[in-house]
Length: 263
Length: 195
Ligand SMILES: [Zn+2]
Picture: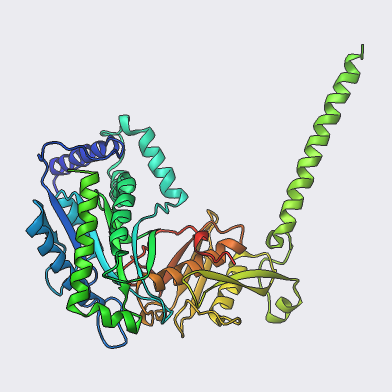
């Protein structure tokens, strides 16, 4: 890379950084007359060589997540004025980073990662919805604090190396600005998963440090539909009827959320 | 009216008393964590020597059978005061499996390659490939594995603030596609069973 190229990249990096730092606090997105690209990104968990969790009868998590994601895509496109982008449409390997990048590159208003659960316990059952826990180590907190304190003096002052480091951490923590809305999204979806036709145990909403959620710059949740490690739930998960019901529940949860926070 | 010298003496006495009180209190606190009290030699402990060391009780976390909570089992380890060695002893107990009918959150055959507690409070724990290769996968299973390790170390070692789990000497993004592993993890005490 030439010197001028390098400095241009550095300047762009600094601009991105400044924008990120100065981003407004996470208030509910205002209805701005539909000016935004209305995109929902659905992430069918695993794929390709990464088969995910396996059932006793041989079902694979990656196949079920894709089947439900495709059904959900259909429901949203038929009923809502939203564009739907899947992080994979086929049985493909996609890195966790690229999955979050699909959301950010499409300026998504909502990100939903779909999984089937697996446990050491054979009788573990039920559905749960997660949003990110900010399990930042002291080191990260310190770096973020440093960044916030010095954001005004950022441009051109810090070394390229330090900038890379800081940019990486910022992107890594992009979800931090959307935690409240993500919690609401998780709540609305979990409410619907708990409705009668499905009849799955309600494990509630939880927080955990999911890699795929950390870099997503919009409200984002991860749904564990049921346990593929439970022979009983595995049998449900592979049925068309159950997959349709789950997709419908996820759809209704999304609609509820969008009513609360119109985009 | 007291003379200035008397006042000075009184002030000094109070100051001394406060310092003495603080000293005693901090000493008392360290008694709770014998890990830092025992003046064991810093290196070259043979097994026999280890057996002669005072022992201390630690709580090691396993997966409960009837829900997804972690439950503690009491174990005795040599209290040799060296964080690396105590961390290894705690993880060896975890690898030994449950003695109280709980589930082992580490896949069978998993070996502990190395443990190192850094000065900044991060424990580096390196497991053999079996941790990944024989892991059942799934969020619940990953959660149990990761936080059984993290909680067992942080709950028993004052010098460990967070834990970075390595596999075969390398950092990993995740164990099987869910929780991120490539940053030190803080304990999640919310996973521990209340009863
Ligand atoms: Zn999964």
